[in-house]
Length: 402
Image 1 (cartoon, rainbow, N blue to C red):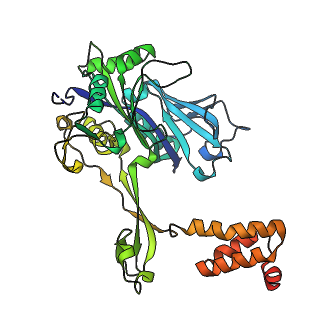
Image 2: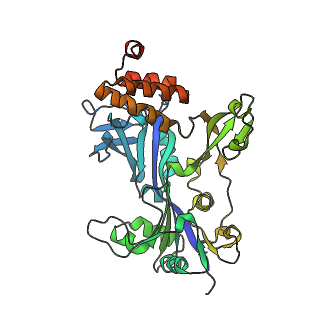
Image 3: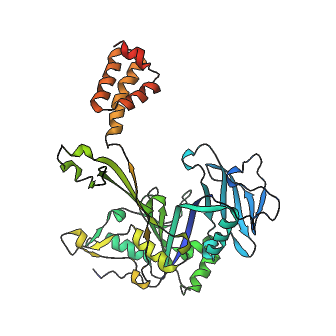
């Protein structure tokens, strides 16, 4: 087999950027050139205005396709040609876990312009601040035919495929009712990381995205076809959750070492989950080297030449030559620790709940006695009391009758 050559002539870009924003203290010197009350969390469909003027920015109401929000406003600014994006307001009660969070979705055209200072200005005058990413797609565009190269690489018997590239979905043409672009897909559509390879020139021409063709020309790509590798990430891609056990003095033991502890000291340890998150800086998404570093760090592409008995020691076969750009530092946030239940706690709770459900239907005291015995055996009297309340069992009178 001929050696695989990684792409060297490529240009990075952000193609999709969806965020959650939260209210912050507005700057009274910059906001409200007209007397309009602007409280983002207080805007409701019954009293919402079709248009708000916030500093130099105009918010114009458009149909709201978002399932969980009733209002959508397109944000534009004088002197910045494409619309900046869409801000969603008036959250419906169907999404209680995201209270106080306002989705903002950048327009695709804005991401190929100098969007960062404009968006920073919008946050300042609108009294909003960045909270978290919901979607971030990083694209690497190249004149190398990635679709043919990666398809051949995936088919080679002398190449090991990591978990992220074990399965490859190939869509060969636009199918009726199928919104996906023809190309190669690695990772499920619901996963936190997915990589897509496709021919970008055809897609941009068909969609009328002349600004992407101009982006290619300005960066020395073309006039021939340009291929794209697009890393599509969701919020969960930037954090990692691990489980361990900690004593009151702070001594830590990992989950796989905990079962080996002597039985006389293991009760001293409490089970904790730790979340370590990377601090992907919004202000640096306009830096090409930073985007390439993010792509390299979070990619699910893992091809290796089978030249060693241990796959972990096999020679990596990167699709791109990442050495073209200087490697940037991706900061890590302070880890967050919080106590969690034992892995089988939910199963034990369901086991206690089953006889209570039977008791509710039959009023047979044997079921009530069985639930109580299970709760005592598992040391889950508090959970037992909660279940009694849920099933309207009068604990004092009915349990006393046993």
